[in-house]
Image (cartoon, rainbow, N blue to C red; front, side, top):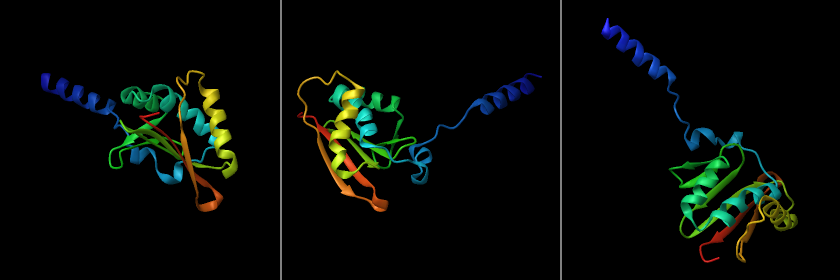
Length: 148
């Protein structure tokens, strides 16, 4: 009788467990969507401008915003959008595929960052680079290094 109760308890416990998805399972390229530079700025500011250079706080903020660590690449990938972050002691960077026009990326990104938080701390320098991607989209990257 005790063995039967133990078996039922184990089966119930195993049935209740759900596997935790990995970044690769969550972030299949076909399921991720592009964002505007404004949306990217809204995600970047609270993570890289407010929490960084405190790496653990920046990572926790990224996870709260839907980023999951991909152990094979070392990047934090967003669960639904085409966004990847690198957060380490050297830099906090966001790479994104955007629908924004190339000349509009910097002002849109800055507008999104300003809307996301008024707590930007000291004067900070953020570098933004862009390159053309397939389908008329732009691949952009915003970086804050530990020095700024």
